[in-house]
View 1: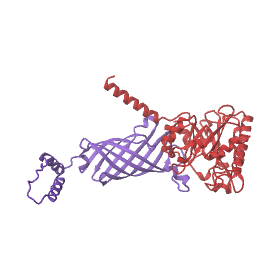
View 2: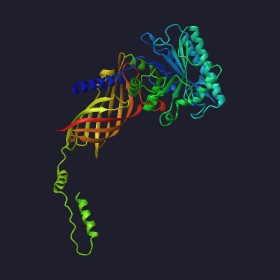
View 3: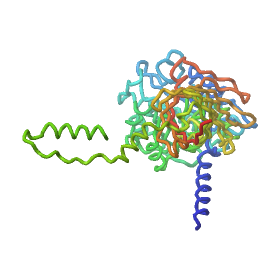
View 4: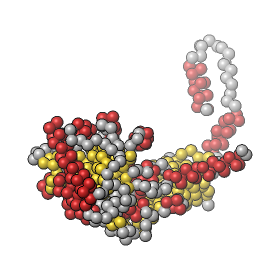
Length: 287
Length: 200
């Protein structure tokens, strides 16, 4: 090949590669972060029943706007309650996690399309890895109680899906490997499956920022997972390449949908995004 | 080099035997080298950056997520003040455009402080959302080529997202109510600029 032709091919190849880095993924699903995603972000309204109801009511182009919803499931060690809450600050006003599960079940049994893309409606449950202040880890008994609570919630979703004929994907997510290990050790654990009317998955939640925590969270500490959840600004390329090399789905979460988030979605092409601004993300994906 | 030769002569003299002895024959430094060194010192700097003002245009590159990876920048410098406009041609790829207006203030020795504003226009279905950021940073010159006409600069910036608006969506302004409200609004980034410069 002549040098000039080779240079031209190289330039075209580089251009195409560059274009590939900045193309919006079309299959990424939109999942509501902390049951509060009508936007703009307002963390003070996360994990509330009214926020959940407003989020589930979002529509776009005549269809449900969401492909799924995430709720926080917090085991409050002092009271021994399983709460729909983000952390200790939410406890005074928090309701039992079963109330959130029932609201999602009510949504599932409503006739009609339940997800934007028509696929299984995703229900993520983040099992919070602390029982009081951040750093208060579960005792063995608390981990079992927390896992049993999550399985109770799963039963509520499963019953609703089977009654309504809807497909659901329930993802048990946590940043605490101990919790997920305890969960899969329970006799009631249904097992992981990526197909069928009621799909069950595990997710490793890389919740902390490098170097405060992420660098010390090891995927090897978790039971085998189907999904890895991470913040795009808090991982390095080595983490990303490690995730890519495994047979896991990638999910990006964010506090706010910024340019950095959009560029990360284009580069990582995650299976789903957890967002507090679902209308913005949906319209961005549909551009 | 002449300093080294003087030192060599002094050391030789200190260790000289008291008895008369032939003077050591030291080879004098070659005059062409001395003349070159002198002419380099004396020759005025002809690089564009040494002139009172210059114009420049080139590429603004980065690998982080702050903007598109390749943008075009250009500007004019008057003394220590360099006014730079960065525009984003990659809007045709994904409908997003990140454009900066910067003031680069020379601090000496190739270092500078920069401040500016970044407006990102993001295409969304049935509209566009705008994100407005302030920029603060430092930058340093890298070695240049072709008598300073081709030059490079490395920079570190802090971008703060103050407001998101447009597209028929509710306006979102920066809040410091809790870290969860503002953590994603602060982002560090690094860039490299390669540019052609010429005095005017």
